[in-house]
Image (cartoon, rainbow, N blue to C red; front, top):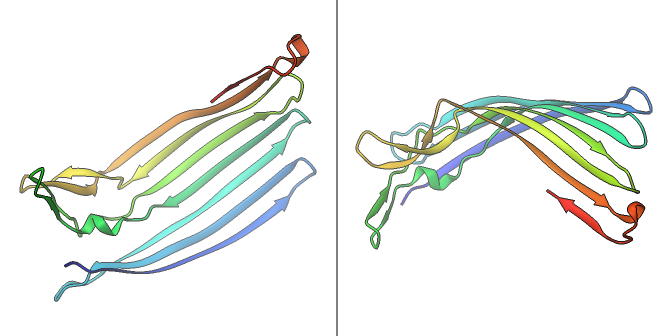
Length: 180
């Protein structure tokens, strides 16, 4: 039996500003403090202090176009099951637990462009980039077993998009094409 305990304190201070009828800002600053550990004789919990927050802006350029941007410092959460070793008797697979795993943190940047046109083409496109510190993944341990652990860094980037094309104005009422 393994008992994992966490005490967490999370605080944020958030405010919004309307700069003009078409431009808004929002900011949040905060931090998370946690004490995390496997409850066992002689084991001391580990303590983490992680700053987090975001800065977001939105601009409505016209009735048809709007733009949004967001920069965020995010702190991940651990699965307490990652601390525990398991064994599958049927498959003869041993997964080691890892009481040294730490939560991942990331810097996330996203930009979104949205077009709203009730007569022809509407949609949004959103490129994003994430720089992840201490990403959680499966790792190989020195004793030959594998289990949850941390990598040094990782990057994730891509583009999310969706669009709706209405065919009403080109002669086919009610027909629409959607893509994601």
